[in-house]
Image 1 (tube, rainbow over the protein chains, first blue to last red):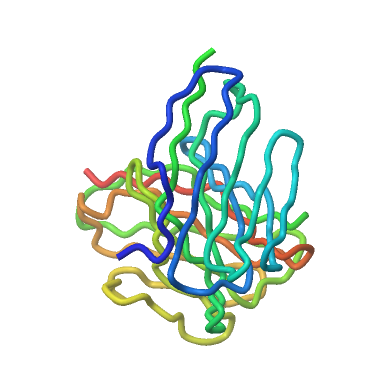
Image 2 (image 1 turned 60 degrees about the horizontal axis):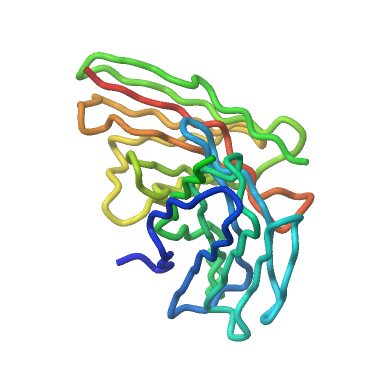
Amino acid sequence: TQLLEQSPQFLSIQEGENLTVYCNSSSVFSSLQWYRQEPGEGPVLLVTVVTGGEVKKLKRLTFQFGDARKDSSLHITAAQPGDTGLYLCAGVMDTGRRALTFGSGTRLQVQP
Amino acid sequence: GAVVSQHPSWVICKSGTSVKIECRSLDFQATTMFWYRQFPKQSLMLMATSNEGSKATYEQGVEKDKFLINHASLTLSTLTVTSAHPEDSSFYICSARDPFSYGYTFGSGTRLTVV
């Protein structure tokens, strides 16, 4: 059972479209990160959110942390082919466990 | 930012042999490192937490005797896959807490293929 469920699992869109990826859990996280991973490489950190209700913007990417710190979303505006990749949410649980728990992943493909 | 270097990037070995993967923190000291495994088109699954100067903590279902972890210094953790079999073929990634941010930094991963 995946502690962090991401949806959708796969998304194929045209350049210029908007999209939202969701990351949901029944557990509380003290912080949550979003990563992007290219094939054959390690994940690269995009953002960290730590406060319930927090919204962070990174150019065309908007990240939101749920009020109860159990869920998060990533919204991409005007997607570009360079956004193609595997997007992973990952969190540090509120139990004191230090390791990251990863979501199931969303594979995004942006067609030119 | 914090940098973690992982070697080798890829390795092919024969069934029954052992393979060592190194993970080094280049610009910071890491008392704890994490080892993940990733199968094709899947997410990362935590295998174990490596602690400097003490035994690693393994996740449920991960064989301690097969995946030997050593964290002998504050900048180096190693994962040795012993008596490798084809089902051990996977992408292995190490990670450490980034001391300069709230996030974690990851190595570039090691693609292990056992033939």
